[in-house]
Length: 281
Image (cartoon, rainbow, N blue to C red; front, top):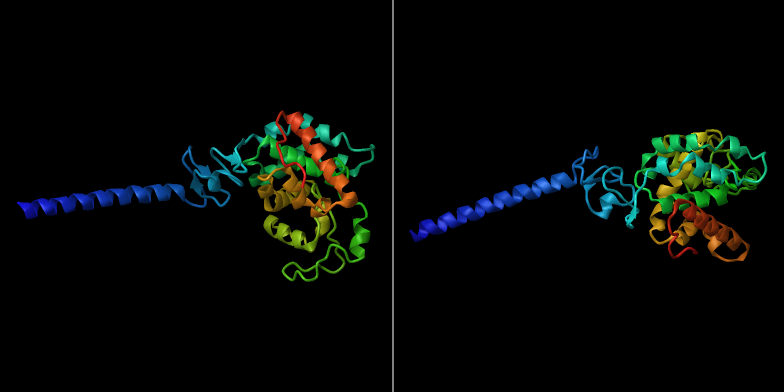
């Protein structure tokens, strides 16, 4: 009887182990379903296409579910519902003069079209991050007045904006990689990977960024999600360094950094949110 009881106990333990293992496998399979997501309603779809509930899944790049913008606690909002025609026009209407090329180029409709074809930008975005993005756009383009960097062709002709040591993304002969688009994409080492990810050969044809209205925004979204978004967790000041670190080194450039902060504060007020701390770099 004693031996039988001991055998029965071991069988129960084995059954418990099998049951626990089954639920563990079930949980793991639910957490990393597939790269096509299809997550349960209470799970987030990560930027890589997996399901889960932590910041890794629900934070930066979250595509679906109860996303948490930037993993920092700000509630995610609808990009289309927040960037209304009134909000967009309140920015572009600040551009000086009536002859700004950007006034016929940057439109709210093309912004939304770009966002729809680059969903990782707006899928998990807060009002504060929207304000931060447009604050930088305002500084980079003069409230969406400039499509190309003023003086950019001359600088490119003088050899600027081509890093010849970057052999992964070599400069094409006769092409200039000066600032273009909503965040003024610059340098071959940005045009190259941006074009690769957007399936556009921007090393061979960088001018397309200044010709295609949707692409002008998509390149800005690429730069933001690739180089800036993570910095936003540390406050707006960190994004200044990510966009243009020279403005954080003192001298005349600090005026440009101050402009970015002012624009951010103004846009936060328009959206009814607090700008938070750590505004300067």
